[in-house]
Image 1 (cartoon, rainbow, N blue to C red):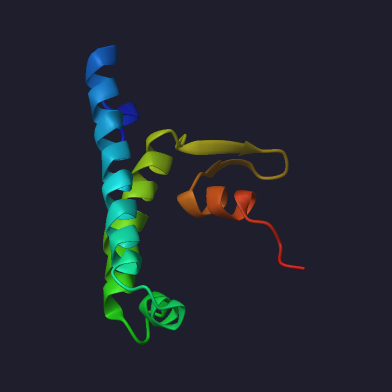
Image 2 (image 1 turned 90 degrees about the vertical axis):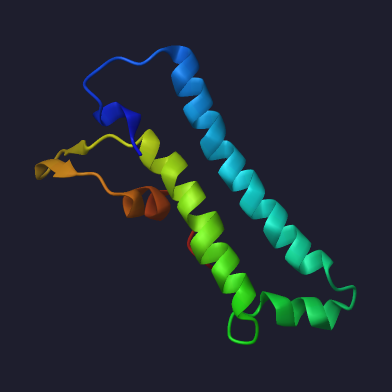
Length: 106
């Protein structure tokens, strides 16, 4: 939910509680992932727990819990359009943020 799309102004307190809720969602997802890995002590077992082909729980935690929580935070501050020197105004997408922040593998 992007509060920038609303036409009515919101109070700073309302926005703070909204944003705090988004941060709590990330924190909860991270706690669930940590608990998932902390359930085992053996390093090889932890590797198995992190492989989504062998353990579907981790894929559920990342794709259904962590990813949407992070996506909501990133989308909240994302402007709808961005100016490009060559083609003018173009739609801004969350994937542009991910591409811009990712480092190439060497």
